[in-house]
Amino acid sequence: MIRSLISILLALCIMLSLPLQAAEPTSGAEGPKPYFEIEEPFTINFLNQSQEKMRYLQISVALKSDDPAIINNAEMNLPMIQDALRVLFTDQDYQTVSTVTGREQLQQAALEKISQILERETGSDGLEAVYFTRFILQ
Image (cartoon, rainbow, N blue to C red):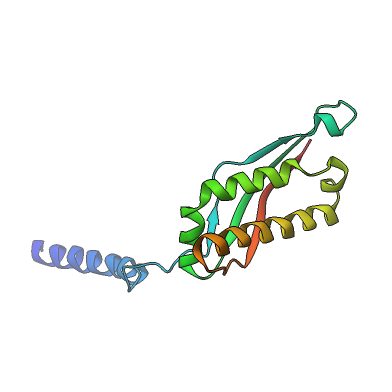
């Protein structure tokens, strides 16, 4: 009786552990992440451009490249990229960034600016896209 109970429990444990083993990845390494998100959001004040009304823009930025070297280069040159984006965003007009077209143009300008930095600093540019993961206009 005890032997058959132990056999049943053992068989049950083996059956329950099989799905867990099958769900584990076969290779221990994950593929490279094609995105790099700049953690600190950019906050811009439009007080001088908006008839003295308090207006703010907050943008969070993510970069995309399927080449892990480009993502690594972006991380290594992050202070330069942040400074260039801060200058670019501050130079914008409130009325322009409040439109979809203006937002798309700003996104393209950010891509060009970061690509220039990567080309100048590393000799290669494989950045595919810049995404605004947060775009709050107040």
